[in-house]
Length: 127
Image (cartoon, rainbow, N blue to C red; front, top):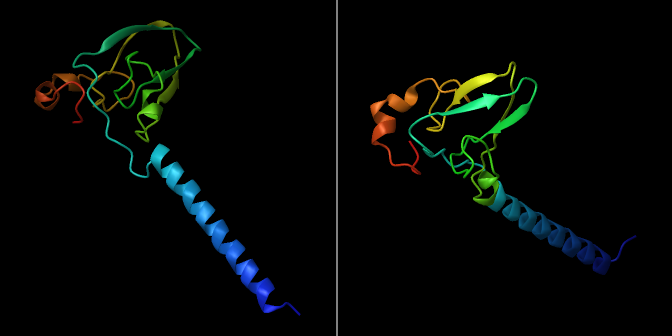
């Protein structure tokens, strides 16, 4: 039979484990927020890029990359909770990739940048 002291030590250990879990979850919440940030307008015109068949690309979703239209990891360091869109080029050709981040066909431009909503938005601000 366990003594009262053993039971209290076990309870204290369990409470300490719970606190450790909270510390980990708060650390994760800082780096990976539950509600991701909104994408921001990087530019108001698309960028034409020569895509190579079979090559995988990472398109910037957050709009904060300095290597538009591709990801440079800014989403992680600015803790946006967003991730780049990985896609593989089906054929070698020049394509217009979206930089306003409002396209309905990511990563490809669909002309949404011409809308009044995008044109009135500040570069670097969310839509």
